[in-house]
Length: 300
Image (cartoon, rainbow, N blue to C red; front, top):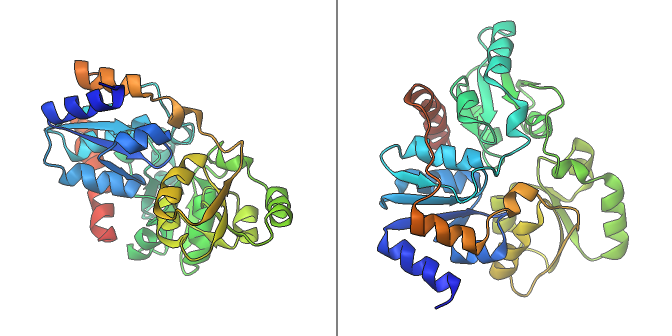
């Protein structure tokens, strides 16, 4: 029996649901019951009937699953898989920003720790950030930790004032893309359309043909026969599966090391031994849950 077959057997035996982010290695995505972006994984974690959730992603995703399903066992194969972006916004900096701008709600990207979410009013993903901001009655909104996503939302919702916290927060993987990369891609692939993630710089967003989350890419990249994709290259696998007759190009440097940590062996050991369980203190989880569920309600 192969490792993959053993994983499927153990998952069925233990009543476990395997969730994997679109940036995970192809073999992990293929073993998952559910793949998706952060919003999809959050929704499915909340709705899951299974008693055990195995989150193949980075740690804040496993925290989110545990917050939404506190009665379930939530496991993450590699708990050291962190997110540099999430580390850029602390609970203390949220409190300081709210004190400086009294009355302004804080919209926090799901790429944040549970402790930070607990200080905020509502969460968002790259897929629903603009809708979340539009749904708020206030005219001034604090937004973090990704400043590029904040700028993207500002362009889509010009009637509001978006204040990024911190002012220069961002994802190291997406910060690698440049306008020169787009210029080179247009020369090399003249027939291709270019789509980038809103975590890319504003200059890259404006130079691209389309801007959207990984979920957006999966919904919309069937409209043309060739694409250059400016996000973490793990997205190419589900795109190619969904659109087998379409040609997709990724940038070689577009790799998030943390998203690539989990292996089949890690997943097997997780299911076999029940490791590593994720815990979020109730005092944090209860407050963070309000912010996450507000997002889910707005996104329906």
